[in-house]
Image 1: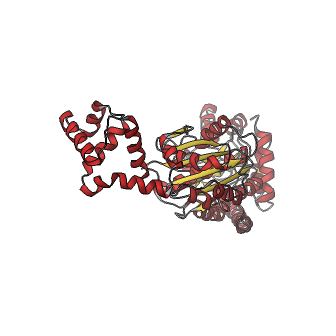
Image 2 (image 1 turned 60 degrees about the vertical axis):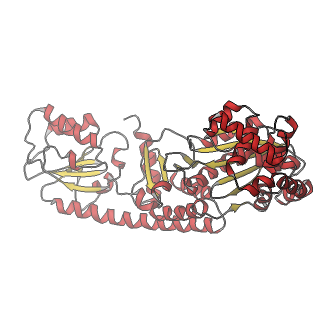
Image 3 (image 1 turned 30 degrees about the vertical axis):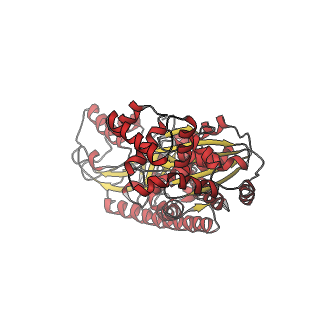
Length: 498
């Protein structure tokens, strides 16, 4: 009951947007001559009526819903025990009906005192319909008013949808559309994916009294929900927002559902060059970085997101979108490239530091456990190529990890000169000519394990004698001594380059 003043303000605010049919509206209808016997707590007569129902059941609660105006003549309610009246009204109040309208003249000539006391106790407005006024007249009055309300809501919904369409057509984001709807409703809105992860939200986080969810079109693995959290309940909210959800769904489909590469400005050219097979000269990296509106001589943060096998490209793009929203709020300059299997985010400006970037990425990833997020840091554009390629190779295990500063493959990246690649292929040509994949596999495994024969045999599932035979064959074919550390390093490099 203490929350009634707040509800009153909410209902008054909604009345400005909707032609809300309230209890007091019917009570004031001159043709019905309804009398208010129990007004209930402050603001109770301002409760909206969602529908009107006539029933003579002693327990109609299974058939009632919140906001109903219940009409009864009390034919089955010939009680003298106040406790029975109290239990009857308590059940009705528990459902949350807007009011109880009691008709005189059929079964009762006077209003039962036990009913009045019970309605007063439980804060349920009690209306009295005088003898001679059929329930059909009350229901028709309520239905006419509700029809007018529904038409007004449809008009408001269409107008809001048109406004959101104009926002989207003017290159507005989904966040811009949500902001506008939140302002209109005075509510918090969020978009969630099929796992319940909030991808985007607008409005203050509060302990909302009412939560309404709208399903967005999409496949079972790529379904999204619009969630509206309110202090109170907007009448006919679903009717009003039905056209708006179509606009949001269209935006989501455009933003997240495409399998094409999406990128900001020239960031696509930059990542395409870096992720290519050939090493990118420093001068080209500087030019591409500058073309992407990033400073090639300042530190750059990078986040690489990759989906696990069970994750759809749409879900990956949704998580990447959420990451961009959160990271974009931390770091002023952001560029991104979304591909079906991987998303790359480049950041610059603000208080860019690896620890801060890692913490923000963990928040952005949230409970998306099937997504791998690799965080890295490059002091300038010259390091960016190696750092991004290293991050992409590191991606795999779910969760947030940092790229190592340097690894062997990163060093190899610096050696991808056409001459070095050609010489490496010539060095390994005798193996390719034999066409024996087992020998090449054995050489690679032997070099990766630094000659540890037990580890090699375990990985390849071969006997030590088999390994000894293969190593001898490799030395004969290549004309090299595999016991020499420099030889092993050269061969490992050649395998990577070739």
